Length: 255
Image (tube, rainbow, N blue to C red; front, side, top):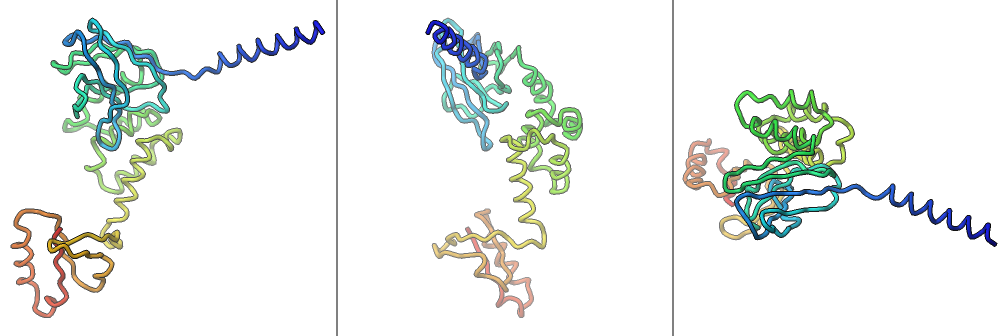
């Protein structure tokens, strides 16, 4: 009986040690803010081209703390204004990080994170003329920072072939991450609207409130405009300039 008790105790102890060893690693953000003594600070995640508040912390004597778990490294922001669309940005991973911020002077310094160091090195440069996103991809193909900059600063500047070339150089370990999935979405949408491709179908009300489905206009010449000033005048001029024999096949859609 004593032997059985000892075996059970050893088994429980081993399971306890194992569970402690398998405890999921998270992040700890210890922050100091020099321009606010007391109040609230908000942690926001960059998602779908905007920052969304995901957590908040109390500022006490100019200090604050966040703790949590990241599913993957992503861009986040800190702000003392809940509705701010321009927080102070940094890259967050499951690490212990020290932050010092002054929001009024737009200053945020972060220590303890190699991935944020890479972000901080490139963030001031990506919108400058001559910056090479290809160089960043070549040197850091497996870093989550790389697809973040592609999505944020380059996706709308590059053509389909350039986007495909960058995507092919990213490491396979990033395939299921948020920013690479967004790149794949960009590529798919660009393929759908290439010259010669069938336009994606849609149904929208025109200026008179009548529903119009694009696929219902096959066989006609279609001019589509989404609310640009003066478009009606432009559309009328186009109708006049076209040959009379073609005019009867023109449909002008104004949304």
